[in-house]
Image (tube, rainbow over all chains, first blue to last red; front, top):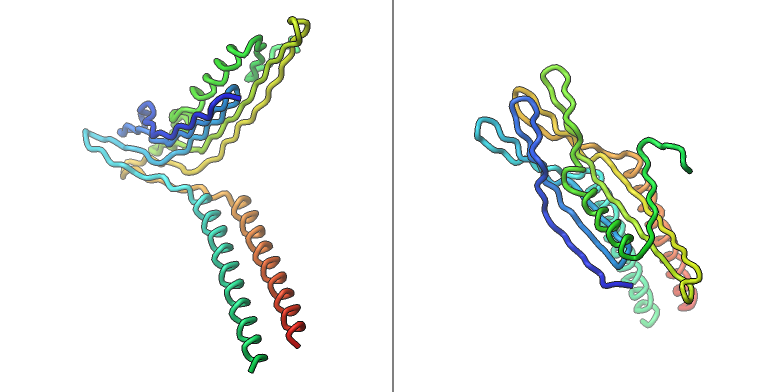
Length: 99
Length: 134
């Protein structure tokens, strides 16, 4: 097995012409490589729209990914709350019994 | 295997060096230009699809003692998912997100299932502790 090579970089793609606008795509690229095994992951982060010399960057948000992260985060938070609640209740019962 | 297959390319890899070159070319495929589709125009509107793309590949080549035998294998996958649509209109440019309902539904049911399992296990544990105290 070779050494792990990880690379995360922002890349601007070739401009595309759509109507009066020139669109320059922006993406994040993650490359991982170990010997003769490689993995590449590219996801869009924005697009720069230029018209008559005026540029405007429009961010691209991955709504699906954000919803997924929110759900997983809520599971962690809910699990923590349930655990703390049970722990507190069991402690209270033990204290009551001692009295 | 000799039949021409449109859109599919098979390539023989004879050595580790060739395999490494093939993996190097994988990163050329996964460039920022690949995530944005070709603009499609209808009337005054032009639409460009922005997608997430992931590609993985692994190749291995082996040789027997004294070069008696040689063999190799490889495999890989590629995955693409539309993330958003860039709409170019005379009024301006806007981005509309694409929500993958199936993915969201799977994540939601997994989350609910995990919460239910955690809650029921903690409840059972609390009951056992309560019985021990009594």
